[in-house]
Length: 319
View 1 (cartoon, rainbow, N blue to C red):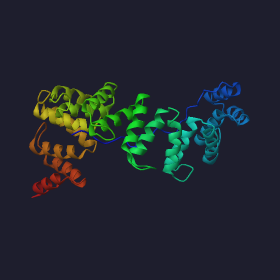
View 2 (view 1 turned 90 degrees about the horizontal axis):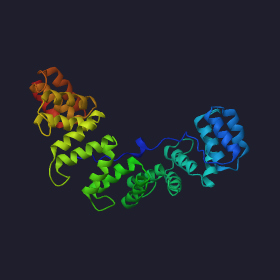
View 3 (view 1 turned 90 degrees about the vertical axis):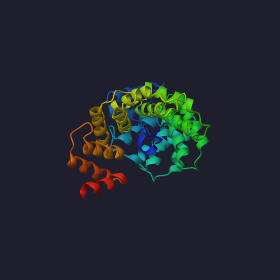
View 4 (view 1 turned 180 degrees about the vertical axis):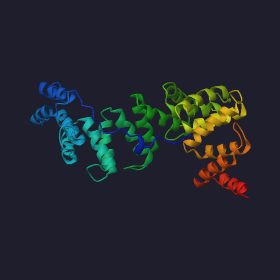
């Protein structure tokens, strides 16, 4: 089935920016940026502190304090610098402030403030901020759930090249969340990402071909092609589904040994369905020699994750 798991804020939000913004034309700021790039932090700090009214200087000084680059790490000072720069309209400072409030780093966690600062940066066309604003609205973090707002912000981030936003847009088109369902548009977005090597998109594209969601007709050959690519990226759901295709000889030449190897990879990646199926392959000697002890091991692992079929099978082999 289609993997409808959205990319979550907690796992894929972009980390605090340690890259130094070099947009300033002022000579002293440029000298400071050059000093940072050459790791002469003492000189950089001195130059940045002299230009306390410049938001670019304040932003970069904040980065130094946050990361402990050339100074003792001090989140309070980083916060102070970021706030000055953010108030003056520096998008990178607004973004990093949002991150601090979102993660409770140096400040009490405050999702509403995080959303406010992300929105400030998003309105300055920063794609990472636009993406995160979309996630907040999608998940109801710091605000009420609003699929339409989420869709709009993902669209902006996607247009600005954010691949994670494009992926979430594809899922929204597929499910009709925040927009009229459009499988063709979802497929188009998945296709573009898949061709760039985005494993989750490769997997979902493969499943769409397998289920006949593309052109209203199943295409197991195309399904196998994209599942293979996602499998090579160690994407467990793709490994599992591709293994099933090899068992049935659907879209690929029937090959039980290859199926066993793929199922083993997925099972070792802690995919419960794969653990159960691997156990059954050991029990029945499918793609490998029969091995009741190995079957029991994998049934126990699947059972601990709540797989009812595994629990039932485990009872049978214990009799």
